[in-house]
Every structure is written in structure tokens, then in C-alpha cells.
Length: 237
Image (cartoon, rainbow, N blue to C red; front, side):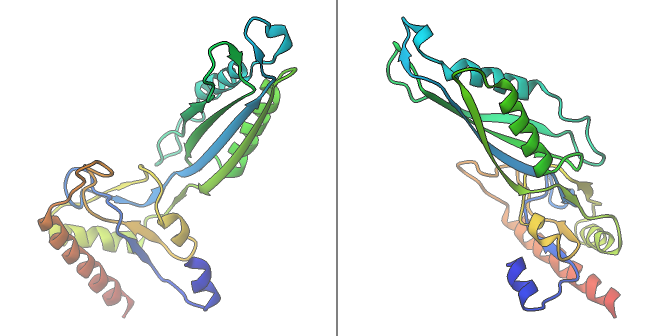
């Protein structure tokens, strides 16, 4: 959408994204930034063989485990105010070996890194590639494929963030706390065109089986959006 808007010469002055930004009460938090996200797939390739003759095989599983333990053990940073620390989480380890007496030829893993502005997707991908090259050994090779879905970003405090905060205060009677926590959102694309603030419903049951929101919150959020629009265009006159 951003590419199409730019191709058509459209310009955006400011943007509100309706992600479920609230924590306990509607409007208690607004997102003014997000950490970046990097997905990586690691494949360890060895030589299949019988467990009774390990000298004739090359087991990729211990090598992959060694690599994952080293990656998980590294403290990526101490935070980058106002962002929390970056974290790496191993989300899957797979061998797919149905035989108990066979050393497998291949083992795979998947991980995700949520990172603050101390890093970029490119620097983290390079770190993973270097770690794979360092951990590989005779008979076992390691390969990594990384995809960054967005780098960290933040909308600096200014007139737009103040207008959103004032609208929440006027409608709901509370001042929202700015936050850069949580996952990724479409704001990571839109922020290249304009300042972006995320204000939305309470996400207490997000992605749960019985995900739900209060109807009263929906109606109140509509009033917040209306007040944001009124304040924005009044300031633009």
C-alpha cells in the first residue's frame, strides 16, 4: 500500500493505527514505536549412519544444539531507552527421525529476534551467519536464512503525539503512557511516510480461543478517534 501511495504521489501527514495497544484499561497505553523482528531458519547437514558406527557418520544434532545454546546465551544488549532489551527465542527444533538407531542427516531450527534500535536486521543476520560458520565442523555444515519483517522505529514526541494523548484524556479521563513494547504492526510500513501512533482496544485476550473486547470500549474508542480527527484538523487551520 505504501508503495502504491507513493507511486500515485499521495502524501500522509499523520497516521493512527488501530492496534490493540491498551493493557488493562482502554487508553492506558499508546504505542509510539516498535521493536524490529527477524525470523531465521537454521539447517545443520551431516552424514546419516548407524548409531553403532558413529565414526562412519556425522551427527548434525549436537552441532545444532551447541549453536542454539550459544545464541540463546548471548545477551544482545541492555536496552535502548525507551525500548526494552532485545531478545532471541528459539521457536522450533526439528529432526523428523523415526528411527531410534539411525543418526540423521539433517536437523533444523527456527528462531525469532525482537530487537531495539541498537541493532538492524542486517547486523543481526550477519551475526547469525558468522556464528554458523564458527560452529560448523568436519562433516557437519550449518546454513542460515534470515528474513527481517521490519526494523525498530519510534515516533518522536511532538504535536501529533500530544494531540492523541489529549484526545484520550478528554474522552476517557486518563493520560496514556507511551510504549514501544509488544510485537510488530503495520505501523512499521506506514512510519516511512508519516508520524504513526497506535491507539486501540485492550489486548488482554489477544489470539486466545475466546478473544473478545467490550462493546463499551468499541464505542468509547470511536469517540477517541473522532476527537483525534477534530484536534488534528483544528490545529492545521
